[in-house]
Length: 418
Image (cartoon, rainbow, N blue to C red; front, side, top):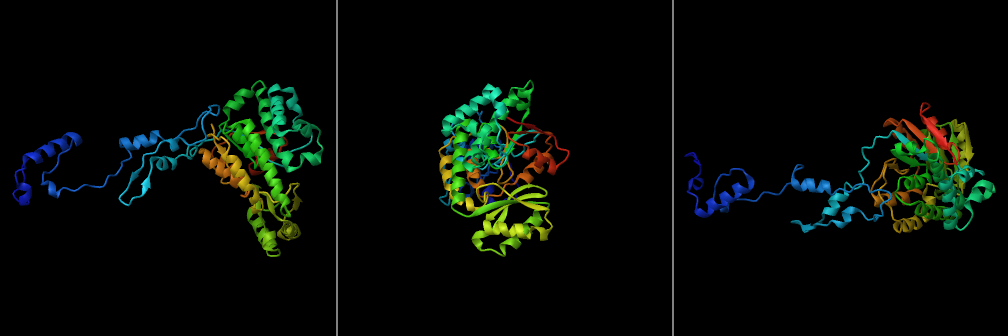
């Protein structure tokens, strides 16, 4: 290697034997040429990981993927078993697990739905539901399992009532969960049923129905899901009993007008009686939750805001608001003790209208759900906007189908009862 005469004197010095050895070693490792200079002038540059580097590829391979819903895998995140900590110049602890965890909940971020299963929530129950399941052994078996877990004859309440008992939160939630999954078995028994089930690439449910959707998607077993739903109903009933609260549907207004109605009602009541939109169902139909005095103020002012009508809902209390906060800790404890896996297909959350794949995030979302507004309108609008072609409502009633049609009259929805 020759250097120009203008080069600094120290760079024109003949390299020592040791310097030549260092140069040969570096050249062999990197395949590049370097300008020789005394070692005392050399500096180490900060290491930067390029996206196409081997280490980056390793990180990509370690990103967790969705296990089979039938696999007996642990609910623990795969990333938790891989820890490669090092200490930075600022003595900050960093681990590979935290790097991988950043992408652990993005498995379904680019989902493209074509066929959806939609599951109803509380309010869809009606005496007589579940009767068709008697003729399908696999569906009837679900009710038998439920009776053992719950300690009472759920099928009898579903088919024979009485209505007042079936409408109670502690019974209606398990009843809808079991009947909806029984409807899946009724569909499976049809000639083309299995092919329909196999075609489903996204699922979601209204409030309680999110648990049903997660069970269908294999995030947890039928039995574990029923235990969670049982506790959820009991916890929500207890929270309702602790405060004088209610819910009302406001018909004929858009969400902005309903919010203005809530603001006007809140000006007339104490802070503990205030109301908020709890269910964003579809254009012209939004459910408001809050203290009874706040709900009464909404009903009194609704006509002045040009609402077509208000309908008081037959529920125990102000669901999906802070009135349900006492239920959260009980749900968190139950969820922590439940094995939850990554769903095999996207399950859209009521809280943020997004699919989640990380089991720990799913647990967190389910605990938040009882105090958070239901984003059903956004969920359906997003699914249709992403190209959803066909939907099936599985379970009692046709509430979900009616809501979907209100959002898009041209949407294709079929009801499968049990």
